[in-house]
Image (cartoon, protein in one colour):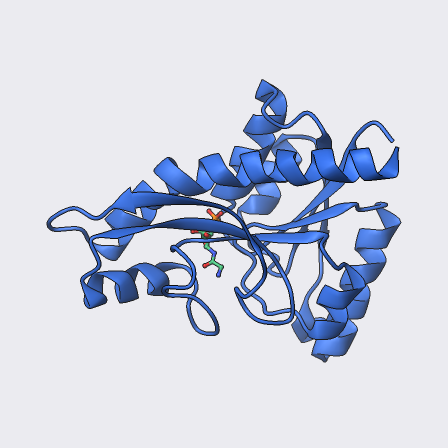
Length: 203
Ligand code: GAR
């Protein structure tokens, strides 16, 4: 196997997906290739980003499938059909069951917009994470990339990067700084790191 097949799961704007696409183009990611983008929201702008980059897309809706079990069964079907080696959760706003995470043990990574174990777990996603950090009054926050297991944001940490909070920060301003200075850097680097391990393992 020359490269690991990457599938990226998204729900929204997809700036982290864009960082991965750009990293593959610029040669930061060389051990993997993005083969599929799966959204759980048909309006996700991330789908446009994938199409613009010529990457296959799929939409899997829990509302149409009726249950978490059926939703995950369909996810597994599309991911396996694309021979996925690594699943990257990039702003994917749905908690996956132990059945799903066990099925892809050590093959799912996630980016979270705080320094885990702060401001993470159930209920901490998107802007809420930054609201909580500002409310608490921490002076440093950041981002974490970690393996995904059955505990929300509880899997082994792969990379972290700290970002300073500045006087007058709003959740939106902080979110943007953490994306620019941390998420968009450590997600592609982590992706390359894990893909290179997968490729070595399979050869
Ligand atoms: C990112 O900040 C990501 O870390 C966060 O949502 C945003 C998605 O932005 N994810 C979580 O909070 C997961 N718990 P994007 O769609 O532009 O990549």
